[in-house]
Length: 439
Picture 1: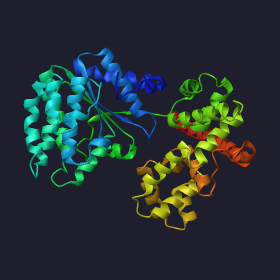
Picture 2: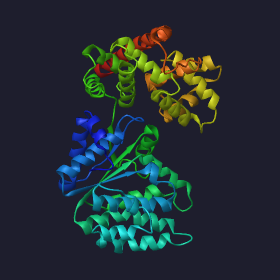
Picture 3: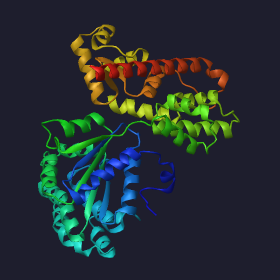
Picture 4: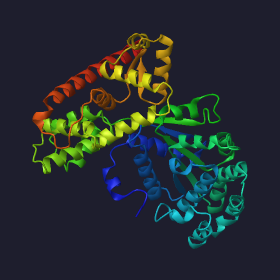
């Protein structure tokens, strides 16, 4: 059994056939060449990691000549020393155990040699031994460690006579290593190794869209123009319906499925949280499986402090703003857009009573952390659900998990109004895009 991809996650996996087909297409270049590396872009909890796990499963089932190597940089990239050990250890674990069992013994310098010999990996030890000796030093040479780590995939592929698909999740966390002395050039070291390797494809993913874009698309970055970008978007209506049916045991009537899509904007995490709360209300509170109960489930998840959507919105909001200068001004911009979207920088400046330049700086920073987006010089929340959360929490609106439908009448009306606004704004944006195409 694949310990990294439990059966319940496999069961819930929905759609993404286009993305999987694209990844499979690029992996064909391992045989046919030239190799084209790929970067997946998508907002937090949109389903990138689940997509990558499903792709790994398919490689394991269908491509015996390719060894998938999955790593999560959010857990590896704490320091150059820990990164080096984790990078090499995870690669050995995937080569030898192919995602089965526990990787723990491969991630300690004391137990890694034993794990290699116990799992038919003695041929890898001579390549790793110098790295382990360097890690034992009081002041390891970080340049040497990182070079050896990034070179190791080529040596491993040669020794094991296979191709590698290196899948690096939350790749933007590699920036942490640049804060340490003697490892500021980590991206340049990675690029140098990538350009000299064969039989290895790199598949990156990250939830900090703007940060990852800068790493891969900024001409000043060592990784500029090295990756093909593949966006991971929210679900369309059909995919939302498929996931919602799974989560409601096929009990949700067909007329509720468009409402679920509208409430969640097709975001898989929101769909999951909403449907699980909906079934709790139906099974425990004996609510009817209808539109009002679906709206109640959404409001409970989004505006009750113990709701999963509430927790997620609070996390995204705080994480995005906590390190920002001018924290109060940024909150004020978000509060303005939560009430009235589609404003220009000049209009926002007037409402804040600041210069247009200052307002543009605030909006640029909010774009960089993926909270707002712009269309035709007007600004909008990137996530309509987060907008709804901000609009209500700034008013002090909170509800309990046991709120009764009669207590939520005013919120139902507010929710219906937002759904109508979102529908109109999406229609306007679509019309604008059509006009641009016709020019």
